[in-house]
Length: 110
Length: 113
Image (cartoon, rainbow over the protein chains, first blue to last red):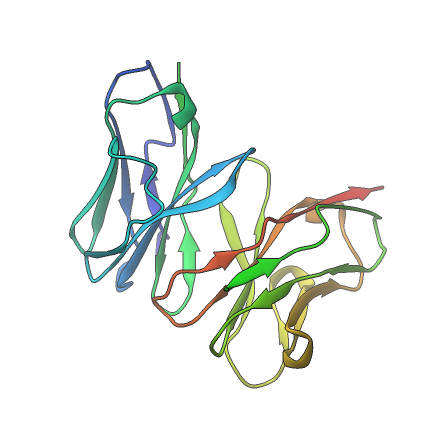
């Protein structure tokens, strides 16, 4: 298996622009997680899905963030409008019995 | 409250020395326990996991961890550290195969030649 796939791997954008991060989970996994990692706050769980249904979105910072999982093989995390404080590494992970992480998307908002 | 504590923020060891990274957890149900490693600029890689059974579990890269229920601990060990083990190590606890994980704040390991 190719593992969890995330795209893009790097994203540089200007404040106010929309950013869309993409994730393809491992086939057969029924849970998907979005995390954000920064030096200041460490690793934070933003939202997770089970069988494509959002279960817990209490970690989503504010209404500028939204996540969708239209099918079992694809999820997006959208930030609109983006702000410099959103600069971070965003990880997607999928789980059957164990969580496996993708390589992350490094986002820089100027 | 559910939590994971990694009391050591930063550990420095010499190459070839033994290593133990501490992890304590608080969890209301039977815990599923994990150790992940993150090298600079990389994602988190699973080192090992404990679900049930033998309390001493073996992982990749020569690591092992021991679950001690009485101490609510799941410490990670390696008998001889290699320079390539320099990374950040995260302990995590969860309750089931689709449940979210609670992560510790991580321990950064530095290895001197």
